[in-house]
Length: 178
View (cartoon, rainbow, N blue to C red):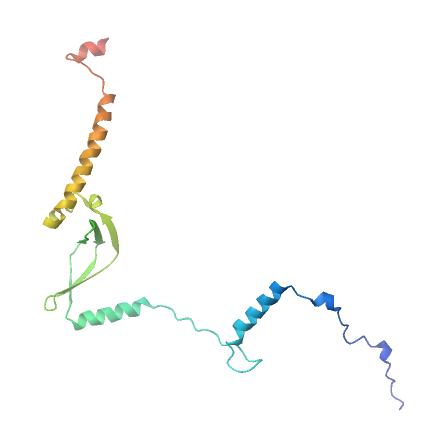
């Protein structure tokens, strides 16, 4: 009993209780807290205190898709056709799907063509005049529409171009000297 005496008055107070008014939370904040709590309760693998399950993000690997496509084309007996500079596919509405320097594979026995590469949607006017030899009878109406639109533009532009040119008359040297 010769040990030190315990004096509780020198120890700091354990915890001071806050008044109830300081702990009140607005209903909006409480609703948000309850919503977050409900959201994260379903992702625990065990009970309270265990780690949350993390969602594994699957990355899209397009090379795997390309490999599968190439394997199927090989199974069909498709062979690459070298030397094709461009491919144009004509749609019903008059637009064209244009491939520049595509990779073309064909299987004659299966009546199958595979075209891969960068495709662009273009109008017929953008590819003229280089595409004229590829146009068939079904595209003549589209070509006629393009010709009519150019003719109407030239008529409107033609009348304004003549206004800039002065009327010289029969002998232009006399007009230039005056």
